[in-house]
Figure 1 (cartoon, one colour):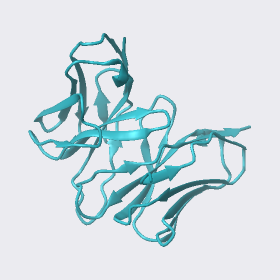
Figure 2: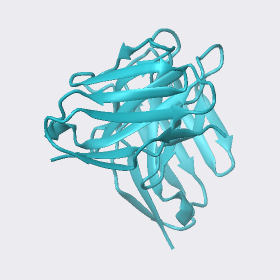
Figure 3: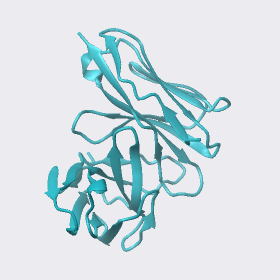
Length: 113
Length: 115
């Protein structure tokens, strides 16, 4: 079983739609949960991170973590063409491993006018 | 703003060549990382370093080595390049995590083709 599963997409939505991106994980040691955004021909950039179960909001973005189900989500409200990118979930253990991250394979999102 | 600079955006090399990929960060970060990114496989960690002259293997170190002689510079070396090492290579850096998570900052990648 893979440590992290992420639907690769591609996902195509109209401008203004609500987007839901999801990852499941199997390693109970993962305690930091992150979402990175990667534009074409650029490196990933950190969008949001959270440590606990529940929701964390930042503008149009909401990160949701359900540790009991080992499931994380990123919601994008009022999606814009500028949100078109690949979204990567990432995980880190609290102890051991330094700052090593385990990434999902990424979901490609296209927001169309 | 943190800047992670990778020396080349595109590189074409031949099978058997020794290849050097260079990465420099300007924020005095202790941690540096090398990943490769392949379609359907995501980012996979090759090597990382948490201090000068220190290195640790990641998930896929075979066929690679690294060098960290100065804090700001982390080099990835392909000792004898092979076609299955054709990939996008990404470098990242971060502060050492303490009680707070420290995000990794990425360069824009080197697309390496081995012919």
